[in-house]
Image (cartoon, rainbow, N blue to C red):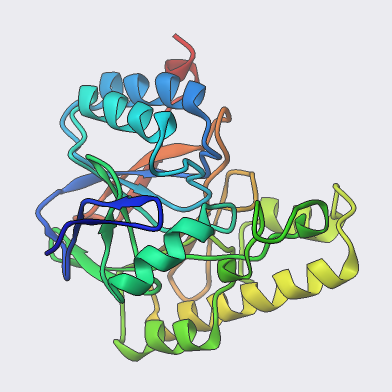
Length: 277
């Protein structure tokens, strides 16, 4: 492990492997740097189950990793008894800071704050003896409305190299991605088919190619459970192959968080009414 400061992003620590004993973990969808939501969500999570120590966050974490937002995450997570937040990176991230830090520690998770770790692409680790595969990244269908190098970065995309590396190490029990697979929940497929925000065809084509990459990884590693974010809806589908795909909703919405039992590989969402107390 090593410490340092790189490209305006604090690099507190790196690691080579996580072997976590947790029997239950939180899954959390897109957060979009929403500090107000963190102040609502984390206390609700603590009320629901104060024994859980790990959060697996599936991208569009969205905090800048060196400012008040990340301090907010650390504060409320610590108060909730959380010991680590492992982030599978999305598309809307501070890639201008993240990429140089990752290049300085290739293939290693980076602890970017007291509790938050940014996972490389791909990365494998174990929880309660279960193999977990994280493959971050996705396509920004709204990139036409963003500024390259400021709030949109080509680095967001899952590359062929990442896809091949994710597949090479074999089967996994749980797959974490930001991007959706092709074989997705009906709620996800409805959004894709309707294109409610009117994104341009060229952006949709890139997004479709990213979903195909994720699907090839899923087909190869055969996870019992595949969690993703990105689509801003909650939904799940039980596939004919005995696997299940779960789409986690975005910040402020029901279905943004839930508990994964690592022994049974079952998932339950955090009740929405609990969050609104």
